[in-house]
Length: 159
Figure 1 (spheres, helix red, strand yellow):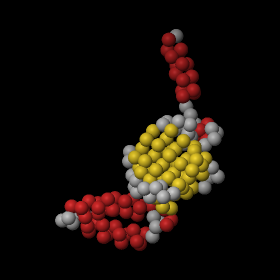
Figure 2 (tube, one colour):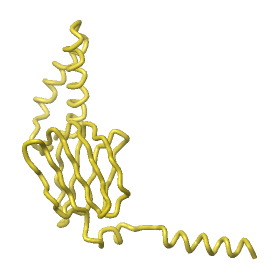
Figure 3 (tube, helix red, strand yellow):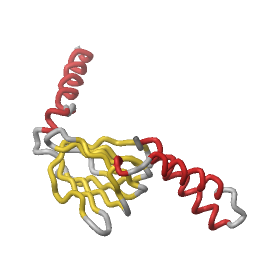
Figure 4 (cartoon, one colour):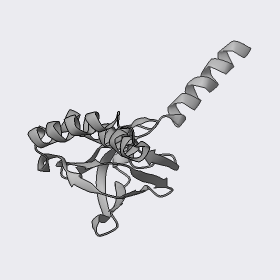
């Protein structure tokens, strides 16, 4: 008897606790603010989903996401707008904050459309940075290590 009531309670809890994509999307979407020091790419725009390159791993953010703060690493921020159009921006780092009420704020030092990069230029700059990583000058080597990290991430997404 106890097992039967426990199973029924467990099933009822699972039905209540689950949230599906359709339910999240029906709430009015995710409000996105995507800002750079010199411009705002999105200001309180309703979008369907945003994928961010968090340092802890790539995360997909939908409406009603749990509030969180994530450090962004080098990578692509994908914005899927309400119409289904996907826009991709390469960021070298930043911060993403999910707030109650389905609000997402992304702040980055720089962000560029992925299709704005030349694979040949990336390859040339990466080769130069890899040479400088072994420099005797610690400052040059540190800067080159950052460049290698960013250019490697960029090379993976440039077409």
